[in-house]
Length: 117
Image (cartoon, rainbow, N blue to C red; front, side, top):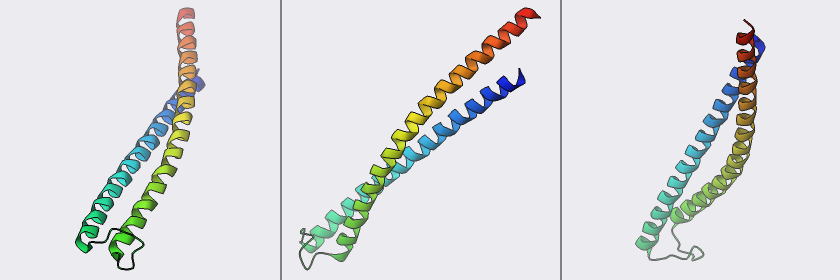
């Protein structure tokens, strides 16, 4: 029954790999969120310094305009990563179910082999 043991190990590896990928994705989203908040605070400071808070004003600070665009891009990236996160979570649930099934089969076969011996 070596093939079942290796199947169980393979499924366990796949589950752990999906968890690692999910954790990396969540860390990236957290970092992007932190960067967005940092940019937004820099925008507020720049707007206070110039006295202009309307992005359409001709004298609106260039740095604030660029920072605003970067923050918007980060928000788009976070939304895309959330979509990936949902897909990964679904995939992880499926992998966990497959692993549990393979482990149960291995245990059943293992205990059956010991009973015969």
